[in-house]
Image (cartoon, rainbow, N blue to C red):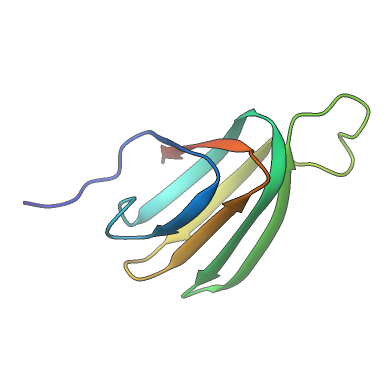
Amino acid sequence: KAFLPTVKTLSTGKYTVGTDIAAGLYNLEVESGIGLLTGDLKDGYLSEMMGIMEGYEEYYSETYKNLRLYNGDSLEITSGVSITFIPR
């Protein structure tokens, strides 16, 4: 059975693409909190300050567009930010 991309919300933790979330192309939206999203990806290293914090919009991204995830890529979310991954 194929592991197809679906809408998924992830918070603090370490995740493996193909196990915890399906490979695919995603847009990301912050649900709550602030923190750091990092990834060791086939396309390179990802490090993005993500969050919703009034007065700090220039430091934290509420969205991230066109994130391509491949099987075996790893992601880590720290500091309590909750991020929804939306398949494109």
